[in-house]
Amino acid sequence: MNKQTSDPAAMGGQISRRGLMLVLSSPSGAGKTTLSRRLLAEDPGLTMSISVTTRPKRPGERDGVDYIFVEPVDFDLMVNRRQLLEHAKVFDHYYGTPAEPVENALSAGRDVLFDIDWQGTQDLKEEMRDDLASVFILPPSTRELERRLKSRARDSDEEVARRMSKAADEISHWPEYDYVVVNHDVDVALDQVRAILTAERLKRARQAGLGDFVKRLRDGQ
Image 1: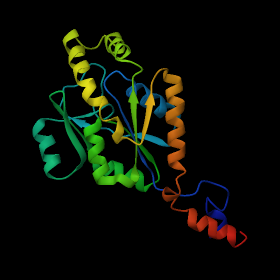
Image 2: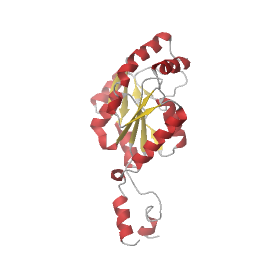
Image 3: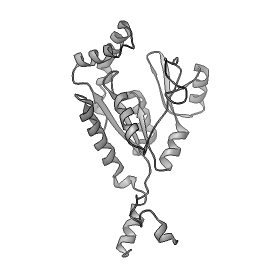
Image 4: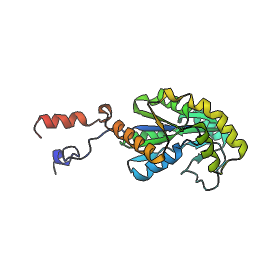
């Protein structure tokens, strides 16, 4: 088979492109984790960025799947060696994004999903702005946010109060994001995030093989 017919674009397949980083951020309880899990379950072209953290493992969590759990000294070494794209302290523990697996995925044309806060998003913007699409998830009301936190039955009343006290500061960063979705209903919010992902994938600048594809069209191929 010759080069022309083996090319995916020439055969009507996908035009080659660089992957993108899709960031979902929200105050705790607004729904970003639920949305992330549903996106990953339905979209084989999307992979989750697994953060490294110094916090203890919770029941049911798996090392290397939910998080990469490390000791503080090891986290500090990763920071000093510039092995993290971003890192931040959240609720007394440190979180960060390993750089190598993200760059490998983007170079291979795979999209990477991030469930991180506004601090991490700012760092990613400084490092890789052209690859980033950021979405902030808002709750429909403060009362509903508190209800969702309590319904998880995972945190103590003191922890829920702590998260609620921090929510106002987190919400204040919404203007820094490319898109904002109000999560009244998780199915509707999921449709909106899907639409954002589709549009970002189709951006001309991300379709690295588009120029060659159009050239072949103009040449009558």
